[in-house]
Each structure stands twice: as C-alpha cells, then as structure tokens.
Length: 245
Length: 246
Picture 1 (cartoon, chains in turn red, blue):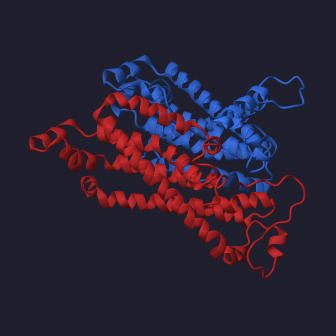
Picture 2 (cartoon, chains in turn cyan, blue):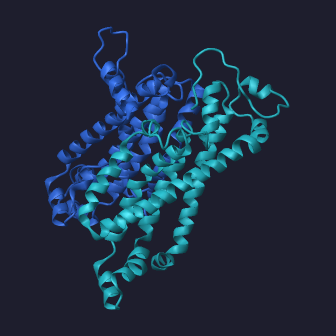
Picture 3 (cartoon, chains in turn orange, yellow):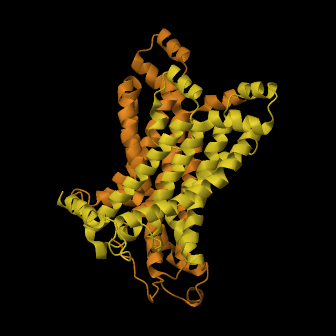
C-alpha cells in the first residue's frame, strides 16, 4: 500500500537519469524533458498495465452482465433483484469499495481486489443496456423471425442480439470509460496502472509534470477506447448507416 | 471476519457525538462529508440543470450537450484533484471546483436528453394551447423529463460523494477519506470502518434522492409507466446516466 507522506519538507523523487534538474527544481507546470526520460521506464509500463487492468475488468464484467441479462430477458422476475444488487455496488464509492474488499483473505492487497471492484462498477451499466436493447426489439420483428421458422435460440442470436447491438455497445462504451478513469484509484491498493505515477507525485508533493502526464494519458486512453468502440459498432451494424442515408 | 468485527467496534467506539468538541468523531466526519458533497451537488445542479434544460428546449448543440458527459466521465477524478492540488493548493475551493467539473456534465447531459426527448406532439399541443416557451419548459417538458433529470442528479450525487472521499488521498484534510488514507494511525479496522460509513452515506444520499424523484414524478407519468408494464425499478436504483446510443 502506498502510504502518503505527512506534511513537512519532502525530497522529490524525480526518477530517471537526470541531465539537468533546472525545470524540476523550478517546479514548473510541465517539464518535457522529464517525460522523454521517463517514458520507457515509468509511463509506458503504467499505461500498458492500465490497459490490461481495464480490458480484463470490462471483459469479465461483460461476460457476467451478459449471462445475467439473458436470464432476466427470459425471466422478468430476476431483473429487479439483479438491478438492486448491482445498483448498490455501483453506489458504493470506489475508494470505500477497494478498502472493504481488502480484508477478504482471497483478495488482499492485489490486482484481484482491484479487478473485483472495477468489475462491480461495470455490472449495472452493462446489464441495463443489454436488457434495454433486447426489450426494445420490436415485437413484429420477433414474430417475423418465428414465422421464418427460427427457434427461440436462433431468433435471439441472429435477430434480437444484432438489433440490440447499438444499446449494448453504448453500455460497453460507458463501462470502459468509467473503468479507465476509476483504474487510477485502484493503484491505491495495487501497484498497477496510471495511478502509480499519480500517487507517486502526490506523495512527493511538489512535482506537477507526473500528475499532468499520467492524468492526461488516462483521459487520452479513455477517449481512444471510446473511439475504437464507436468504430466497432459501425463495423458491426452496417444496416443502421444504410437506414440513415 | 474478525477484521469486520473490529471495524464495527471502531464505528461503535468512535461513532458517538463528541464529549470533547475538538476531537472529530465519525458522525462529525460523515456530516462534514455530507456538507462538502452537498455544496458540490448544489453548484453542479445550478450549472447543469438550466443549461441542459434550455439547450434541450431549443434542440440546439445536441452533439456538445450529449458528449460533454462522456468527457466528464473520462476525466479521472484522482488526477483532476491532484492537478488542482499541484497548481492551486488543495483546499475546500479546489475540491469543490473538481467536484463540479466532474458532476455538472452528467447533470447537463441528462437534462438535455430528458427535455429534448419529450414527445414533440405534446409540445405542439402545449403551444397550440397558447403556452409561451418558458411555460412549456416549466409546465410540460420538465415534469415529463423528471425520470431522466433525476437519473442525472442521482448519478452525479453518487459521483460527488465518491470523489469527496478521494479528495483526501489528494491531500485535502476533510471528511471520512481522511481516515481511509491514514492506515498507519487508524489500522485496517479504522480504515474499513470509515469505508463502511462512506458506503452508507452514499446509499443514504441515493435513497433520499430516489424518494424525492417519487414525490416529484407527476402521477400521470407514473400511471403510464405502470400501464406499459414497466416496473418501477428506476425509482429504486441509480440510473447509469443517459445512454447516448448512436
């Protein structure tokens, strides 16, 4: 765990091989030299870890939410309890949830704890969007599928799920962006991701470049992932563009 | 299990109102957090609701209004707080600014989507009855948009409480995050106890807003939802904010 430095003078750890500390000593807002010197040993590994952390959380969250959504689509009775539980998980503040999970023996201070917490934030968003997407498929489309001789399973996979894709991907977009932003807080309990340089900078107390670059990378990563998902949706639902034209 | 019991014991020992007014108790810190969050939520509503509702009424700037919350969501609250801390020095003001930056876009987008999504025929009917723009907005569009308006308000409120907790990691000494970030002094039981209090506070805020939503939803809208067989789950849990589909 990262223990925050108490008040008082701190010796900044600027990291990397120094050529000159002039910019760091002056404590300017942004030192480009620091970025180029620390890209390969601090920032790039953190970015890579952050990607893994987020992708794993969204994929696991999606698998769970998808299974629950299919169940709720068939049996309405389970929808309410699922929404209630995932809603409570979604409401608990991230930092508190991370801490509440730490005492559990199997988790502790590890990446697993971070993943459990991050996954729990994706569930409500994904579950809701998948169920809403499926419910919004027009009844006559469903009947047409049945009329063509499709079984319920065929109709689900070939007709209803493809039509629900825009709503499903909208959910994945929100979940992904949320997880990437929250992933920085996860570094409080495990040494992974872009939160590491941010906490490092908070601990050092004086150096701003680390904060700005790591925060900026997290935002850039979120927007990039969002853009990728938009492209994915376009590729997967060619008919929606044809209709718009 | 023992840790959990210790945490509950910690809450029991420190929960009471202080006999010594100088020593902060958990109640004290929870109320302080409620205060910090309350200010943040109030400012976010004051900024987000009018702008979102008015743009929705005019059906203008939809792209910006819908996407601003995506950008707000992408900003890591920790980084926003830490950068504010680095540039200006973290006090209540910077914390509140960060809370508003994170929460106001969510309120704005939901207000926009809610108001802009009101059935145009209903608006036409109101205009036909001779209502002015203001009256249409206030008497017709806002009541019909209550579910989405509240989805935004509730999501933003939860977000604000969560971020107010993180503020203490970024160096702001206030609220329960102060205990969570200091495991050396309070041990795991204290940290866990404070975390439980934060979770309870968030659920409480959410519950109060859910009740408010129930009270403010026009009866006609509620009956219509029931008639369509939609369960009243929206009033029970935080909505995952506006879903900008395409």
